Length: 340
Image 1 (spheres, rainbow, N blue to C red):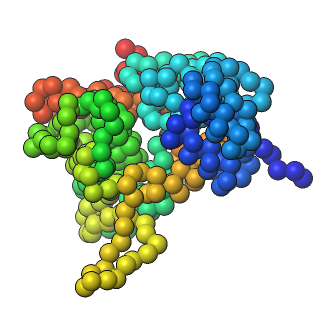
Image 2: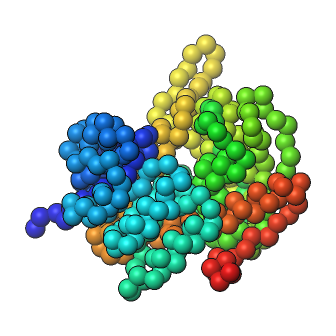
């Protein structure tokens, strides 16, 4: 019997779109890249030729194409809302890169639109790939198993080499820290109930926004998570998590293949950006997404439209805490927000 093949169209031929196209083409079974769209048609054409796909200059035309069964939205953040709604209107599965939208109100549109489809299918997935990284999954399993007792505290560190142009306090949260904002409640099995921000000394390498940022998340079950975000750490991409239990503590470790021994020291290396650290997580996420499409069974780890909305509601609360000088701010529940 021949293998079922899902034809995937990718909107966005930048770094993320290119990485998704390459992984799907080289490392994911059951899928082919059938179309690439980008406003820069030569860029779309070059990427499409490398994976045997058809180029488009308009993402909405790609969505309507009968050569596309499912869509990945990897274009600029401000385009996600309209494109995801268009995919839903076409009743096709969509994997949106984070964030699902730039505001919680826009993310609510997506949740409502998906819910309104006949049969309320789960068509929207959000690219929170930490849920598929083997080290992050193993840490989550330690929480679930309870071998060391209940989780009491969590810590996260997220450092990058340099921030992107035009970064603001909010975009640092909604584009970078949003990975931790999604992963930590999934890790701990409890939604975020309240947040607070903590003032830090400003890095001379950051202009126009606070860097580093420190904030805390408290879950509905009372677990406190401390979070550091430092986009201009300069030394490399470095993301770590730790959970402190009643009877022990467990931390993630940067995956590495080699250790160098020279000049009276042992050393390992880290990547200059996220791609080396999370490539395998993206591959597993894409494979899981394709399998869920073909089986009709959503993957329990895959982030949904509601999860995308939940992360943005936490961002809203963190921004409000910053504006209030670090006061603790409650996070509105998804259901209350949908009713508002």
